Image (cartoon, rainbow, N blue to C red; front, top):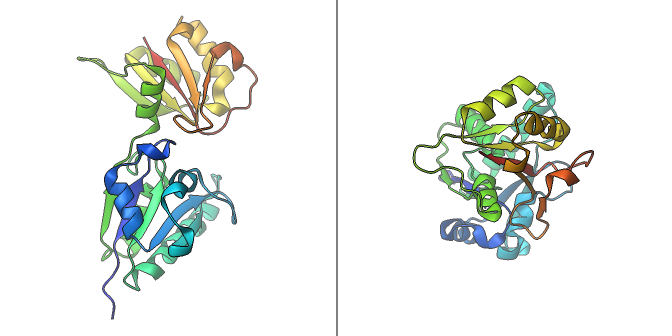
Length: 235
């Protein structure tokens, strides 16, 4: 009977492989199984691409887990359950598993859902999360925009098409970082103009990666942005 392996939630940063922590690097070397999220079977994830430089796939068990981009609860529940079972199959053999996620594992991360379900189904599994640099931090630094100083209030929220809710977030805080902004960019640009904040905002895609784009706001109207885009507004 093997002792159960340990599950690690590894934050691998916003995009630049050099921004992973020393501990995350060590866990990538030590864990025999590397699990990573992906949208489709056979594809690679953003997190996988970040760590490619540090691993030899032939020396690791690479476990691609499908997390579809859908809101259908039945589909999501089925895929989450499959992922937990696949990871547990390795843990049951005494193998440690590192689940890699871009940014930080405890902040808007796929690992959060996985961790909750693992604890429900297999409470004996030991879980440790390794912090990572988030896209919020990466974007503030790349843009040169301080998020908070002194007693400033800052918010980090998913952008939605609720104009009044987004307006209130901007009214109530000195700085706001909006993630998932791509689908509502035209509305957000209109809101910024209405609030005279157009000159106070910046948008970045795939921050710190070799595919990073820092946008001028007047370039964005009608553009189909990548999902990994966020907006920073600093009054």
